[in-house]
Image (cartoon, rainbow, N blue to C red; front, top):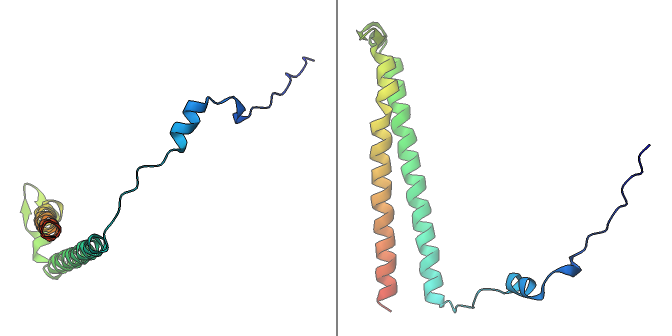
Length: 123
């Protein structure tokens, strides 16, 4: 049998003082005004409201499109390039809806941020 290698205990005592002090340093303190804090919280709430509103509207539109496709069985009988029309609508019709909602969200979110920075600039 081979002899087992001797276990070596490793500790952090061998660290260089410079490396330890660099890691332990904290970023400089920045004073945050109560007004800025309030505006930042309002911006977060506004963005959350916007996100939830867009999500709810998106789900409603997608559900309406799905129900419309289910309610119109004639779309399954019509074919285009060998595929039922309902399949093509589901495959390619939802992407423009996704893009429209994404554009709406981005424009509204940037508008919220512009108002936020305009309020901070007025101080």
